[in-house]
Length: 116
Image 1 (cartoon, rainbow, N blue to C red):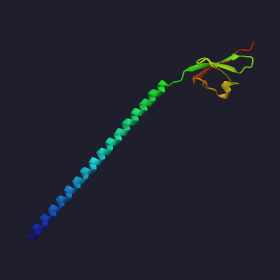
Image 2: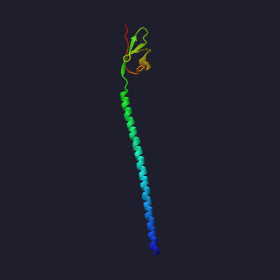
Image 3: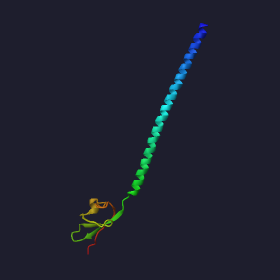
């Protein structure tokens, strides 16, 4: 009888340990699920923000313009074909002026006056 009682007690202890392990695993599973939901939320937010940035980049594309030499007396006055503002630049192409300092349009072409 003593062995049977001891075996039953050990059996109960094993069952309790098993239930405890299962409850701990369930708690861990719940915690992992919560964490995944949070991570998925952040991933979704990041994707939304990158999509918005792509749309903004497409909307903010700069216009292209020509940079025209308009006064040959000094050879340094230039006009942007987009905003028609004039400014003094000595050699815009070789000095790396790729954008209008006033409107920000990208210079696709530099138009020099021809010597007569």
